[in-house]
Amino acid sequence: MNITDIKIRRLLNEGRLRAVVSMTLDAEIAIHDIKIIEGQERLFVAMPSRKEENGTFRDIAHPISLEARAKIETTILNAYTDHLKEQCQ
Image 1 (cartoon, rainbow, N blue to C red):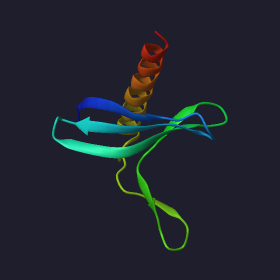
Image 2 (image 1 turned 30 degrees about the vertical axis):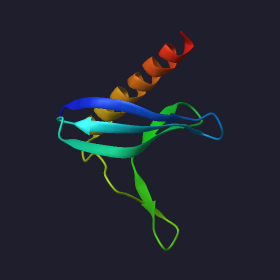
Image 3 (image 1 turned 180 degrees about the horizontal axis):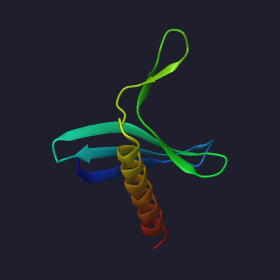
Image 4 (image 1 turned 60 degrees about the vertical axis):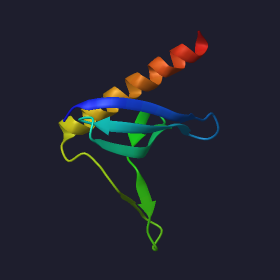
């Protein structure tokens, strides 16, 4: 799996949601509505999900392995940090 593009779609400053991101894999598959959320101790990435009738949320797309999750989260958070730095210049 190669992450070939990360696009920061929206930056937010209200509540815990910091950004909404799209990611492209192998220049062939796009995943939209990935969220960057400010947790109690650090930023983390939440994959796109939908709310079910019983009120619980179910991921629409998600990494299977811990390694894939770490790669996705690191790449997205680095792109987010870089984007914020560019905004300040």
